[in-house]
Image (cartoon, rainbow, N blue to C red; front, side, top):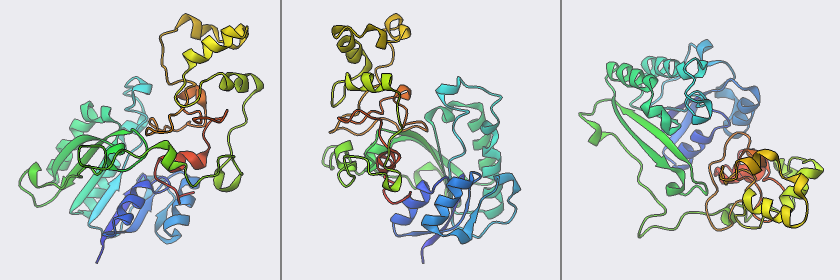
Length: 305
């Protein structure tokens, strides 16, 4: 019999997909506040066990051997400068409420690496240990597990009935190290997706302004960055296309307005990956941002659309 899984803060079901694909787990309940994400989860894993509600409004939970979930990470991200007043920083309490109610044999929580150094995680650990769980933590890179993306995430696994952390199950890398297959690449992720966006399954890019299109065209293929774009624009006499801030801060982030490399994993895919001004989200060759369909493939979510 497969182990039963509850997915909290489930989103479209990325963690559920990973557990289900292993063949040893079966989802029995999911909680997701965002109605669009909940609908997508239901489409992929069944509507009957999705709770499209805020987690604090859910009181009845299925029996399960495993609870998984990633409370929203924005409050812990460096992008939010450790804003302690961010409400999402306290959602771990709801996660542990469910753990205390269901008493699964194992729980898995993921978040940004900064979580592990936060006072909230110290509280989380103390409360979880009060529920008799032994906690093992670490930072893992998704690329080491066959995802075509360099994505470092904090993982906390709690287990009942064990003596110390050596008995807490921990994932073993499958890619990237000596004797293992190499990391998967953007080229591999996009292999089954039409090069030209066809509008199907969210394979359509954001429509940029004409000025942005000119900028995209001056970013060299396969890993080019905004600094190279600036040099190219200047050489063509297109000085007006270079924002003043880029000239004043010429040593800034190389990823903004950068292209992905074909034969490397993608950089971390964040929420607004369809905006090149947010990171290295330009297609390796096409003068466009990657599409939602391509972003899903870079998350190993080929069939969750």
